[in-house]
Image 1 (tube, rainbow, N blue to C red):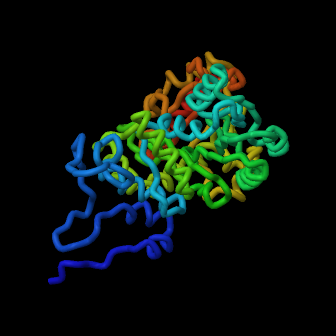
Image 2 (image 1 turned 90 degrees about the vertical axis):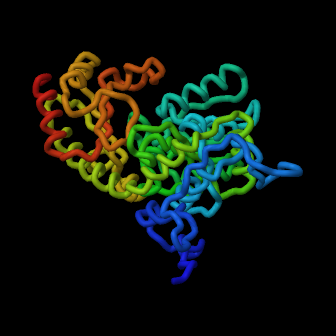
Image 3 (image 1 turned 180 degrees about the horizontal axis):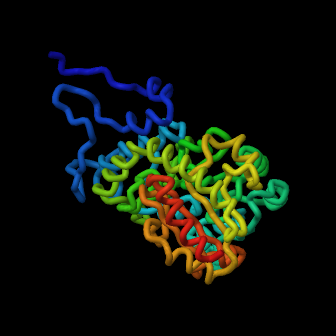
Length: 387
């Protein structure tokens, strides 16, 4: 019996589909009786003599071997062999990426975006650390006009919770033309839906709490870049700010990643069907889902995305109607966050940090992997009571 077995090298991994990479990347080297999954390393420090420089573990705030398989796997999914960086939360990764804006620099960002991103950007603006220019990210001409003198363009596509779709390749090219970096928050789409590095993004961030980990049981974030210099800057931010993941959370995140393709395939198919039914319900004033032909972002999404995602936003008459719907549901969970196996629903303006331009009656639905007819029956009885 041989003690050495074939293993996927860099070239072989690069040839695999994203669905296969989610399962195959980040595995231990093969040998007789070696484990199939990487181990969890619980240690706050590492044995060593001499100087602790680049590449040395030294201390667990600098490095932990449990992070690395997850970082490798997500980097492969995003189309680079430069390892990703795992953070303690999505906000940890976002803060590191926003830290790329020089003091006094210009940040161009969507007016509708994850509220944590907006909150941090606005806070930096109020302290004079940067100039924030808010734009409608779906209006390419307006974004390009705002890029004069910019240092960093932040893109969400689709946006949270308004579901606006950006022309990422065109905006990335325009930003680079003026010397600005481009960061794309790819949480909603996942690397199965779009790979922004391949169309010009410099950095991709994820709240891995959502689809990548996929079970609503950990807080994690990731930043991915193909640029070694940018990675070093992001790594320095993580190390000096202490935004590191616990080893157990990292291990759970990688375990969740293994089923990403199956979860996204199911939830996305269900979301498409629910969006069609919601669009036809008289109690729903507007349905935003890029997979609907009627959606303003449909044509752009069809050209850029491999699938339309699992998030739907609907607008009801007012906050009272939205609250009544959410309160009436038995299967849908009234909770924030998204991307888990369970379907969640919430009126977004219940968060005081949400932009005032988000309608009071807007309800965001994160579609899970339950049976489509069970989910619809729950929604329909609540909507019928409003009509």
